[in-house]
Length: 463
Image 1 (cartoon, one colour):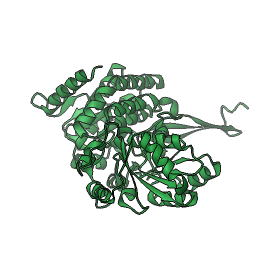
Image 2 (cartoon, rainbow, N blue to C red):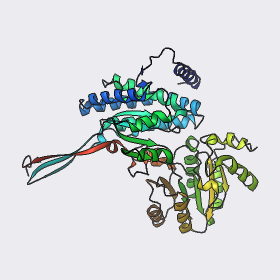
Image 3 (tube, rainbow, N blue to C red):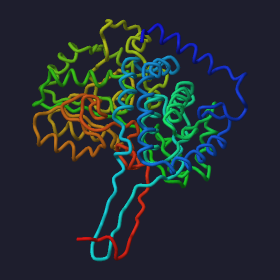
């Protein structure tokens, strides 16, 4: 689809969604409600219908969701960039298609069985009921696509509380997926939300007795809120992924991979390289190759400190610059960059604020250390124990093993860009709900289901 037509379509949709004059005061349709309580009640009714469907029919619903998500991947990407001002349109298309194609569905629900002299026992994965899901502004449609596939595959309905700064984009995704569900013969309102998501509406959702499980993707505050709810909770929290480069690495490939990973969607993914720790003896070579692959090196110490003051706010990323283009960020301190510049790099010490803060923007500090052991020690320190993602470039299996054991992250990418860890150019399934704080790791349908044991005594054991 031509980019001009997509922009016109996005503008029309946003204008329509901003107008509420012709909308009913309770249900707007396609899963959108005025009141959170009504959204939850509707989702519960839909879930009761869903569990009557065969697993094959549930598979058809998932297939329809995948198809609709891919068909609207460009629209979702454009809306997200226009509404949030974050990220890169082309990379967001990739993420939407990735979520649609590589999120596990009903195939993830595997039955365990035990048979012997005392009969037959099976352990099945069964639905929780209605799940409440809090989604981020960084991946407003990708998370909804991914969670919807996994949660519905497990037999649940989903009530979303999108981030307010991405509400129009998230609502559009929910409307599209609801229509896809109904078109496949599924129940209405299997996915719901409110027209005006707020903190109060989110709190109402978290407290509601019919919400059986909470899944939150966001910062420490959001994760703490769901863990304090008294309900079963999955928390996908922050990360600050270090990329370690030792003296055995293929430096030319490592440089390209690091820049590609760091610049992907303007560094919005939580898996993306946030700092590089490199052994001193190969650091100059690595930097040289990085410059050939789109890195803009800042050497002036005053400019580095200016940049730090601009993008770091009280130890955290300044939200004004999260997901922004490199040229926009550096223009604020009077630096013009070439058109092909993707990432700003600079040499700093290990305790520098640019290293310790998860910036989520195309700024990549480089720390030089004496040897690989020092690199591993520092990487563990600056990752802050989030156990989210780490990357290493090395041809030494012992070094790779040592770092993997020390860092204990959910995702560990070896000799590739960070996004390989979520399935872009790497094997395995994808997820946009990476649950480090609560330990589920890369979530999928099986994480949104509870185990139920069915025991038949003295029967059906035929061995």
